[in-house]
Length: 164
Image 1 (cartoon, rainbow, N blue to C red):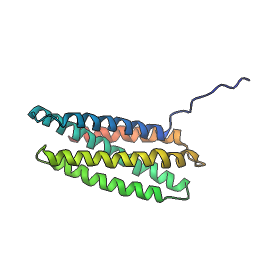
Image 2 (image 1 turned 180 degrees about the horizontal axis):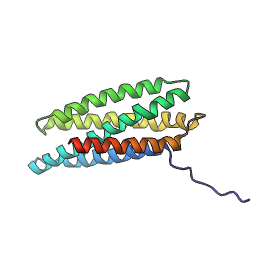
Image 3 (image 1 turned 30 degrees about the vertical axis):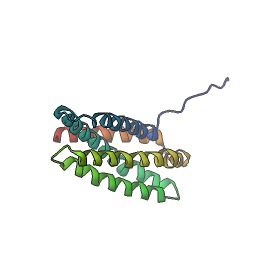
Image 4 (image 1 turned 180 degrees about the vertical axis):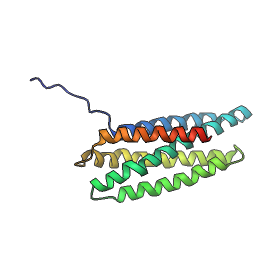
């Protein structure tokens, strides 16, 4: 039987990383809009910032509800997960400030920029450390977890879109 190189099936880490790439692209779009002082650009920035906040809120929630608890059960060293949850708390605080902001001004832009920097740092740690540990963990079915994360993400997005 000939062996062929088989690409790994997308797993929970793949799904979470796709979210990371999507949000990074949104932060880049936001950054490109910050040069314009036109009222229409301010409104586009507000809309994009709200979209970023929704994506990050849902992403953090599925990680906290499904991914992190399963990983805590599967690995010995959980300090990275503790740090990730602290990073989530900081991001949630900034998200709340952005969502409550009345004006799209320099301070608003600064908060979005800092949120992007927090997320960049968080993503690097997840990609380089947490995902590596998750994929190496025994007894952790990351393919089945991907389906669970996807279903929960869809449900949360529907809830948030209906509430908006």
